[in-house]
Length: 78
Image: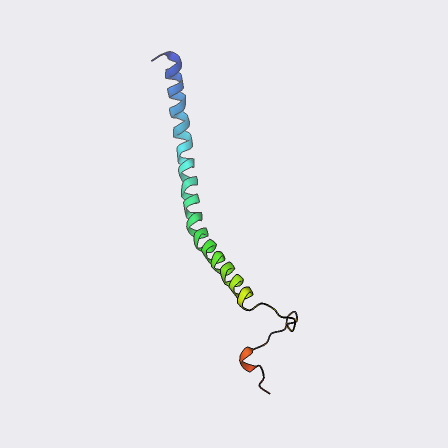
């Protein structure tokens, strides 16, 4: 080994020793956040699909007014 490569190896080792614990912590936190975010993302997708299906099958008509709620089971009952 030359002096230059020896210095490089020592510097590389020192940097890795210093950075590795912090890098490991970042990886742990990223993994934990993915564990929390993944179900939320799936729920958001399901909600979006449900909303699109509702809009498709129960689209507003001209009779519908903004904010009006009609119970279909009671429609036509005095």
